[in-house]
Image 1 (cartoon, helix red, strand yellow):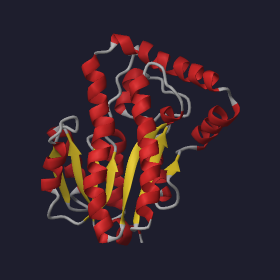
Image 2 (cartoon, one colour):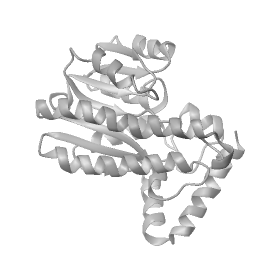
Image 3 (cartoon, one colour):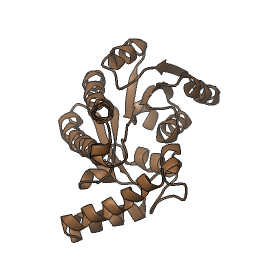
Length: 259
């Protein structure tokens, strides 16, 4: 059923490590060929060597912060029947906003906002034309309130959440399932660099991806992990907004201090 709806090929953007690499592994495990996109050719080659024993793998080296990334990926996939697109790539400037460079924040907007819009527009049209498929956008628990010390990142993830929910309604009648995955702390290399001891509710990438793929086609938004779902409910529904922002600030300040 999954392969029939979302196969034969999945495109994973930001596939070099962490959640992106895990999406590639689990999609291959479900029988889909995969196209892997990231900046680092060496990291893509390692994943290709791992997965090519199961399915067909194509690697595309592209910097998703650049305007030409879509054209590069579109050309590399023009001959493929892409049925599922996962936009996992993200850039997260960490620290006080005014101590960060403007360029780094604008780059985060390019990767986290312009990228999803561009790829959703191009591949959404392809998916709608075939009358079936899926689009997964990675959001975050930071999307639900202001998140100090990752202010730009949190704002971009709020965009992804609202964007995915709008597309969910627009595209469902054309056979395309859209899902926003609001992940919390996940045991990825980037998080462990900032928080070697972990973070509250931290999940393994395997669990996040498995829950996300199981939720695809069932709802416009999902939050992986029981702890994260409870914490999100508490912070969004029961606590004053200024309190939730303060709690987020206390947590992200620890990440900044741990760098």
